[in-house]
Structure formats: structure tokens, C-alpha cells
Image (cartoon, rainbow, N blue to C red; front, side, top):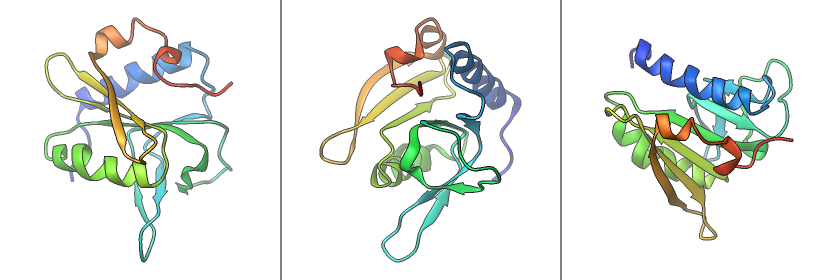
Length: 146
């Protein structure tokens, strides 16, 4: 898959600035860090665009266990729609990641927010334009590290 384009990077930067302004420590908001996804026979891995962690990871981590992962965000790129909307939610839910967001590349840059339900599957909790979301507090949508 080709690297993300500049529009993708701008969306990621806007979200990072929003989280930083809310006080998320720089070592708990990470971009393109690998996470381990448990599998039936062998563990796999994914690389979300942004992740928010409950505590800092050990130095040099390449593929982190999801134990302290609070939120994974995927900015949907052309060609990854099916994976980001169907495959990753199932994998992330099985890994116990409590919150998963996607950001569409439509005119509104629609953010769809999911929370892990009691049945172990994601439930949609909201859908808003990115510009609207950035006018709210991150803690309105997801618990952040203290």
C-alpha cells in the first residue's frame, strides 16, 4: 500500500493537536505504532494511524500489547475502506481495545466513534464532522490518561 497522502497527514495532525491541547502526554499519543492482535493460531499486528495509551510504553516498543490501549484511530484511505470498516473493528474488538474511531475522507471528514460493548463487539456511539468534534473536549468522547 502506498504511504498516506498529505490530506491524511493533516487530519492526523489536527487530531494530535486536539489531544495535546487537552493534556494527553506526548508519550501516550502515538502515531503509526504497531499493536499486537491476538490470533487463534498466531498473533498478528496492525498499525493504527493514532493511538491513545493509559500509560507510556517501554522505550523501543515496535508492536505493543493492547492492555493499556484506550483508543485506536484509523484515517480511511482510498483502498483501505473495507479493511478499516470491517476487518479492523473485529480484530481490535477481539484485542479488547475499548474505543475505535474512523475518519472518512468525505467532505465533512466524518468521524465515526465506536465503543466496545458488553458482547465484545463495537457499538457505534456517534458520527460527527471532524470540524465539529475538534470544537468539543476529547473527554466528552473517550476517557483520557490522567
